[in-house]
Length: 105
Image (cartoon, rainbow, N blue to C red; front, top):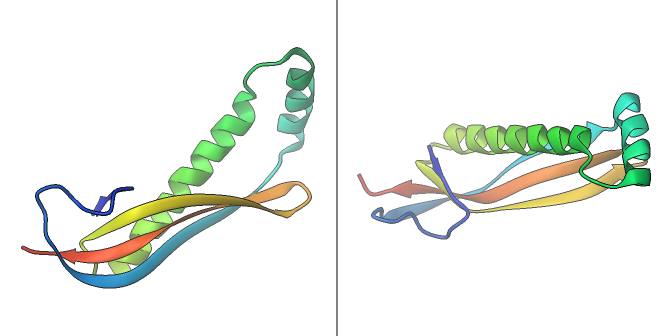
């Protein structure tokens, strides 16, 4: 499966728009990460625990987006975008969305 943030795939012709596909993940904070984040906020710098958590969440959201496109019989997903939102105190959602398409063979 080809997937891209661009609206086209170089060297490929889009023949059909299958539809919008999404993949999302809701992540909750971990008490250990919160303690380390609190300490890190005092001295400054990257909060690696949160960086790792968000990277894992983004990767899982992409996997779910690709699975959704495969279920619809798509060859590729174009125009992928990401959004985040707070769901409730202590948790947030990352969503990937794009357009599933068929490509000329």
